[in-house]
Image 1 (tube, rainbow, N blue to C red):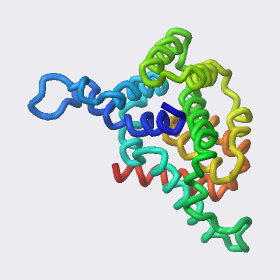
Image 2 (image 1 turned 120 degrees about the vertical axis):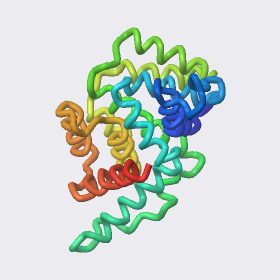
Image 3 (image 1 turned 90 degrees about the vertical axis):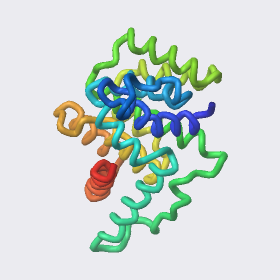
Length: 227
């Protein structure tokens, strides 16, 4: 499994994880059907460890609205396009095309790793991941991917001290920065002072214009409302 496939699994596993929480079993069933979700459920387990139980329900609804990496890119593109149309002066850059948010195959791995890096960092912004949970995440990733390099990279990202500047350094374009910020909004509790502060600092380090930052947050709220 490469970085893009893992990202798709993580973003798409939110609804599976949500369905398997206590009390959320389908009507008429005594317990959740864990065996029915395959690698999606394994990815959901990693997602649950990253986010912590307190945010699983909220992320489950958001992830269901986003679907996967392609859907995330489509929503980032919509936010970016809306922001440019709303500028009173001439746009600061040519209007991006949807393909700018769907990288060419040669760029997919770096693009997906940047978004994964943002997701992992945002999940750590409340400080809940400890050494025991890092070990569990590594074990579950071992069941998801047999690629040692990818596993090693993710383990290093989970263990890395939280640093918005380090996260932002992975963004090589405003399109990637937009996706990284959007997935970060998905992963945090925006009502938490600590996590809100992290988001604001990340936006600064990503050099996101204030209006674009607001538009990306609006897209996230609309997706949640529609879930």
